[in-house]
Length: 358
Image 1 (cartoon, one colour):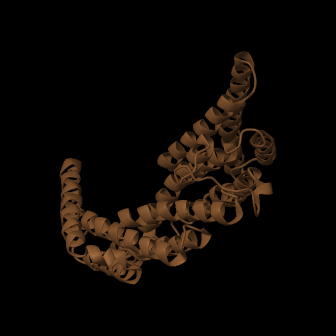
Image 2 (cartoon, helix red, strand yellow):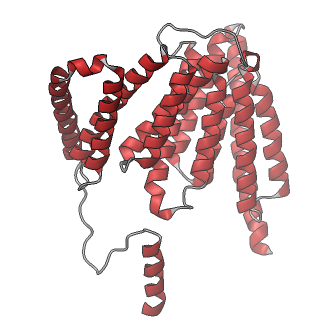
């Protein structure tokens, strides 16, 4: 038995998965309230430090080149701090310093470009992508993925007047990321942090779209570029993500899914596509729910439930119909979803029974 265990430990070690040696008790984790206090202390220390630096270098902010250089220096200092012994205090102190550096870089880029145009947001998107991939901090990676989602939204809104494209592209990216969650075992936590950041970004984008507000506080977009694709471009990309997700599930569970279940699933996709023509964003919530079910992640399913509630609430609010018609519509949607759930549960079990008999 020891001969079979040793190669397994070696393979897990090469994959970057730590294996506890001996029969000792595992190390106790730090209580959440202690970690929260350390995080608060890190932010408080960072605010005092940055306030002291700002008072001494106020003239630097007026110069775009100096502000950008000092911002990059702060980001580099945050990266170096994260390379040292890990801890909540250091992690949040580095995050605060990095955010200050990013604001200085954004200030310098805005002054250089003259306005918050599409080029400005594309440059910030590039910066956030680099930070999301390079920073050795899960919190920083998640925040950078979230900020990159918003920067993409603003870049597309300013450049081609198609903000719904951002939601569809973020949905495609997070679907591909979560489906390949275990492809790199050594980077599992980092991939999950990026995935949660993209989910938060998608939720923020959809919420702002539903409320009809601009992320730039009163600044709205002119009808130019690809505005004729609005608002169906995001729904089309959402349906594409759902089809790719179903294809992935059917390929990895070929023997457990009965043929009639596949037909029913594609039929549900067609019905959902028709519903999304009226209830925009419904497909995004459905994709995230199915994604969470496929990978067995209840938190992802929770995000999908929030997206579904947002899209249905938005459709319910703007629907030009009587309250009775609205109530009957919601009743029909609920019955349909319950029927799909019942068909998936029983069809999946029937497929597994047939595979076991063979």
